[in-house]
Length: 215
Image (cartoon, rainbow, N blue to C red; front, side, top):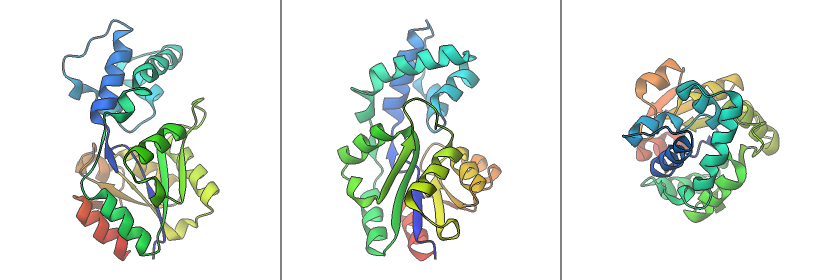
C-alpha cells in the first residue's frame, strides 16, 4: 500500500496556464520581448522559473533573477488567481483522506504562494504537509523539493508515491527512490512522461482517483 501521496500543484491539481503565461509575458515585455501566442509559454509551467528563462530565452543567471522579480510583480497580486481547480480534484482528495492516505504537497511554486492557491480553491485542509520552493531560489529543483517534503513529513519512501504532470516530477521522484505517477490532463505529454520513466500514467482525474485508492 502507498499510504503517502505526494502531489505536484500546477498542472496536477489546478490549471494555472492563464496566470503563469500572463506573468511570464509581463516579465518578458520588460526585456522588450513580445509573445504573440501565450501557448508558446506553456513550457514555463512546471520547472523552476530561472531555469526556464535561461533555457528558453538564453537569459544569464542575473537576467533570470530580474525576470523572476518582474514575474512576481504580476503574479502575486493577480496571476496567482488566474487559475482553476481541475474537475473532480476536490472529490478525489476527499476520498483519499477518507481512505486514510496522508496527502503531501510537493511543488516548485514558492511555499507561501502554494498555500494561497490551496486556500483560494478550498483544498488546503486536505493536506497534512505543504512543501514548496523557497522564495530565495535556494530550493527550486523538484528533487530537492521532494527531498525536503520527505524530511518534513517523515514519510517512508517505500510507502510513498509522487503524482505530477511533467518530467520534472517523474525524475525528482526517482532521484529520491520514489515511484512516480504521471497525469495527462496537465501540461506534459505521454511521450514526455514515458521518456522520464513514469511508473504509471493516468488520463483523467477519475482514473487517478481509482488508481491512488487501490495502490
